[in-house]
Amino acid sequence: MCCCHSSWVVAKLCWHHLRSGCFAEIDVRCFAPPYSHKVVSAAKVCGAAAESPSVKRLHLLVADKDFSFKAGQWVDFFIPGVSVVGGFSICSSPRLLKQERMIELAVKYANHPPALWIHNQCTLDSEVAVRVGGEFFFDPQPTDASRNLVLIAGGVGINPLLSILRHAADLHRDWANKGSGYEVGTIKLFYSAKNTSELLFKQNILDLVNEFPEKIACSLHVTKQTTQISAELQPYITEGRITEKEIRDHISKETLFYICGPPPMTDFFSKQLENSHVPKEHICFEKWW
Image (cartoon, rainbow, N blue to C red; front, side, top):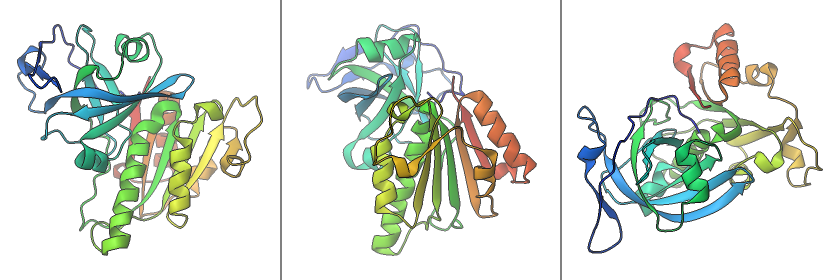
């Protein structure tokens, strides 16, 4: 979970089923603070699967047509009957929402009530509500200068960075097919997890690397691997942590760095980049715990 925000805690959710039975109608006043102008939308679980032994992936169908997000942002996650609000990064691209009214989350098991509900009680057609938040995002405009991206992820910190990676791939498809829009530079993903079974979305990542071999590259790191690494993954795997030198080799005036992972990791790389004279406005980071 990427969660560097303070969620407004919900005391009560009011749910009234619509005649169609498709979505819950929510009395937003029950949990939206008076200063909030962000869209709170009903959503329905339309897909669920284990992404790893400890992470569950959800697809949510979002009801409100005005609901939108930028690649890298998170959602406040409201559950009927659960007073604690969850905060989970979106791992899908904005285009999936635009085309199919769907967002994707990947939630690690924890004793936090929203995570417990997702792992133990959530089923297909479960109804929740979501509200977008966060200042960690990649949202270039067509006239912006082309930038390279370096994405540095630890554990479930991959979630917002996968959203950014997918969005960048969508932008590159637009550029390649239409010759217009934002021109994305190169993208390098550094991603570290305990072992290959905890490297989330690895097939999705490799599919993008194979689709855009001249644009997208990845370096997958495992720190506590005890089993043999598959032949398919071996070319991309390094045993051991992501190193300062690997990141330093990608520093340039045209490169933006996005970092998400455990606080010690995020602090280390953001500080190292600053010490290497990368402008602060080129370093974006978010911490999870």
